[in-house]
Image (cartoon, rainbow, N blue to C red; front, side, top):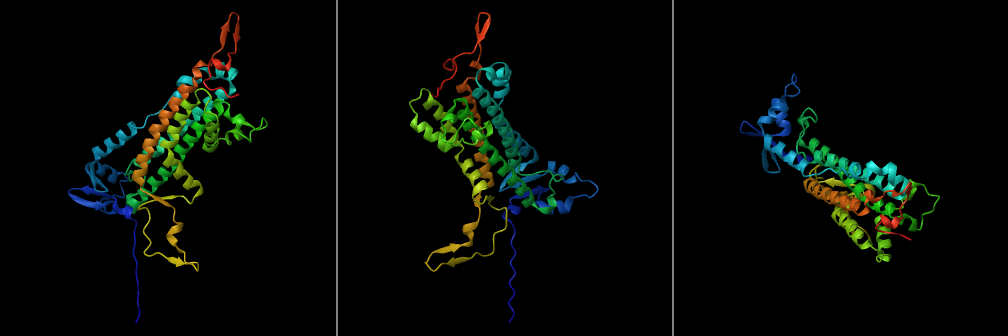
Length: 332
């Protein structure tokens, strides 16, 4: 007797989005097959304005979907701290008076650019549908979902970089880098930045809590560390622990394997799978991280007080002020 086993499996994400048109519900690829026009590449996109979109059970009209996207964009503020508070005096005042502050100002500029890139990727990830002319609907929804997952990964990494930049701003501005055991004056600027990490800063703070104003600054840093904790962990998985995956993006294996070792310990093939997350939940977490990191960056720039770094007018001479005149934390 011959036995033939056929296993068919498809990604769950193919079922996440349906299009409702003229009272009938279609999978994305079925809608494309029924209504695409080889002579008009934009036909499906034009038709979509008269459709409803059902995503994971929730139904949107085209206008409602556009409104949701616009509201999401509006909820993610952009900062202009560098241009408004640092750039006007960075060459004529800050660079001449305090090079550590100048470098910290450049890191603020970098952090703001990273926030913009993270925000851009996050907005693209939040959009549940793309135009057919950009991503062919004929292949089904999984293709669009996959591209969304790429943008989520990008956004995670950029928000993780923002957190790193926030630590570096503090590390450089107040000369904490000079206390790192691996620091020497022979190190260039970029190699010095590589010495900065949360573990060192945390240990240094733990031993120097009595430095005036350090506790207040550490509360700000802790806010970023706590608020961005999940994002930092996901970034660590992406870089060092086999990556992350998103529920529904690939078809489930029809079977799994478990092996029992001679010592009695069992191990499954699923042990080697990447960390699996819910894409839409991650998008919401990233939105929260954006708001927290923006707030923290504003607080740190206010704490540093770049605008206070000014020459003192002493008659016919300009005098460089003592650091105590503008710096809230002095590291001996």
